[in-house]
Length: 406
Image (cartoon, helix red, strand yellow):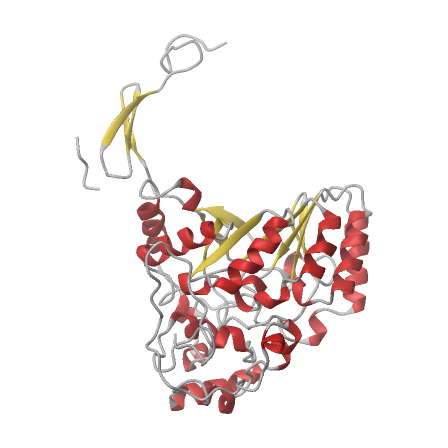
């Protein structure tokens, strides 16, 4: 029974990995190229990319048609979360479309200064669950360890925008305090390195932290949360992967939000990490005007698997101050998962998660496939909305409630 139930700068463009012929985000237009004198060697150097990040409206005007409101937002954002965009990521943007999904993630708008009654400075209550500076210990057997204050590109929806980009966020002292705390917290078996972006540390700095953690017998798993495969893929070098291989088991969760971010450069970076033996997962954030569409999300998940990245979480955007223009109804996320489940491989279906405001932790949200019960049967529906019945049986084949189950 059926139940109702971007514009590219004048150099070789990055091509999105898709089953169909790739389509650019925006129309190709003639534009000035502030990096026209950069050699291929410089363009492929992650340090060059960082040195040449876009931080001012004057620089963006060479690439994009900015509105007066956008120029104003870039200038006033310096007191909050500064603008910083790598040349690589900037060339994925549309010149003329201010609603370009890549552009929306990186360029400030005056919407960031809209005050919502639901805005929270520290939406996940990390500071309340921080026994020492730089460590968040919310769950019994794992901690979050902030080891970098910098990101290659500052996402406008960041849930740590209250502190990211400030040198005081991470210092040698906070690293020392964090390592000391983890060393003495014997129940901790899983450490997640975050920031900022841990992979913006110099190889030697990261090697020191990993060496210290691996010297602790109770630390079994180390994870790194990073967006550089997406925003600065040049950072993934043979030297980095060789160094990281010494610290297995090491897991890497990256962060892609739109199909057009899955470029040949991103694919190469992820392939280098996968070839070095690191399991790769992706934590996508559901963002209004970026990926809050089932078709876009499905394409993103397909693209991720094609570069050996397993979709892991789809996060509901946190209620961080100044980000309400990115928020979507919870029903939208559930709908997107419902449009993925059964309609594509299970490998493509991430877990839809909400980080409860106030420090309650993460919980999964799933579509309701249990319609009810009738007698000793559950009424279930599949991805097509068709109803099925499943017997509620206990061990030995008895129906639930019949006799005793020994």
